[in-house]
Length: 281
Image 1 (cartoon, rainbow, N blue to C red):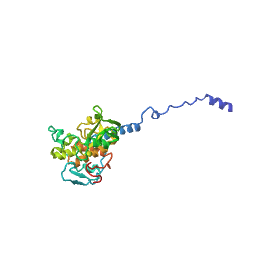
Image 2 (image 1 turned 60 degrees about the vertical axis):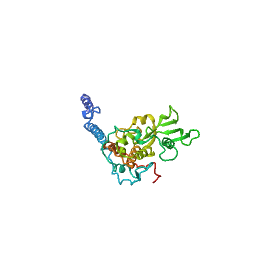
Image 3 (image 1 turned 120 degrees about the horizontal axis):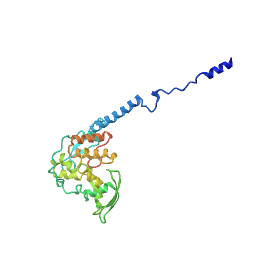
Image 4 (image 1 turned 135 degrees about the vertical axis):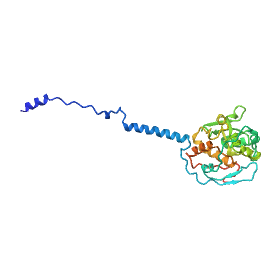
């Protein structure tokens, strides 16, 4: 009997392995995977559109504006003393309109370059070099004329060596943060000659910068040019807003939108006072 059962078992066909269902094939995209990929693509496209249209990053409520105090007109003073506060809130105090024609702009409308507006005995260019450079040395028999130094260049984030000379001085230039051509087309044409000279020489509106980068900026505003170093953009835009508030200049719609986009990433960025005013004043 046992022998008969064994022969019967041997005579039965051996079961074969069934192929896995097609849905289990890892090479075949699952519907869920396709949906996730589609959702990511839609989110990327939406974020790009929001960013380019000025709707993202979302700008937080700016809060109360800094205190603005009108000052008596004088050479070496801003028109307005800007108190401490958020740059975003200060931006909301600026008038918004299109640029005025600039075909009558001349650099001479802002006075001779690099005057001694603050009356400290040194011209503005050397004041800024002394402020922004480290390891400064002076020319022989001078406490003003900067001969050499090292610049932690703000627009690129690189370090530059400055050496005074016919062929080397141009490597480090002094940038007008609000370019004078831009200032002329956004309100400075209506200022008095003394007020324009103050604007052109205010340390608030001046930064030592890489020469070629400064030339690339030309008279661009925030809508057309921002520093290559993204980590400096918040300070740069806050500085531009502070200059425009101090000299009652306006911003264009595109310029304001660009400033809001930058400050949307750093809403706590503070405004800055004029370089003519005492610290804390």
